[in-house]
Length: 130
Image 1 (tube, rainbow, N blue to C red):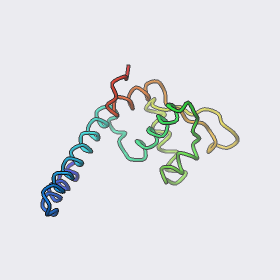
Image 2: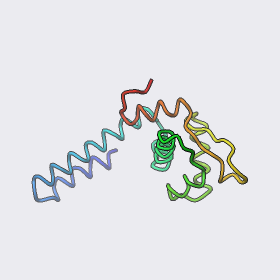
Image 3: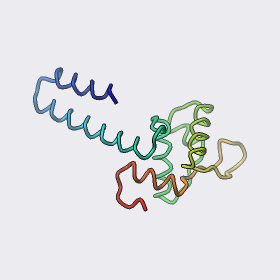
Image 4: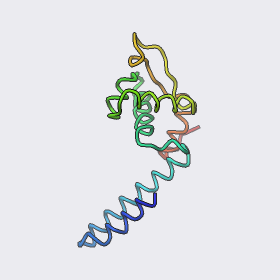
């Protein structure tokens, strides 16, 4: 967070055009606000890989489709073992669940729990997170 705020100050100094500075400053402030909201509803689980995993599962939920572990690994660009650790942390936090899929651990289906869906919805700032 402090790094992002320093980046905002640096950007204000580097960009010569005042409208460019203002546009960047607005974008950074919006990004920081989203980060703070995400951290409020998902404390300690704001690493990019965890967040992207939650977003992928929320998107799959919205499309009423399934997503397999290997698809998450590919989408996040993490190694298999790292991806499994991320998934295990999210399961321990009761945000996602792992179901059967096919042979092999990589083909298992992942989905958001009801708590996971509620907290992701809140972290996105959506209003219907009952």
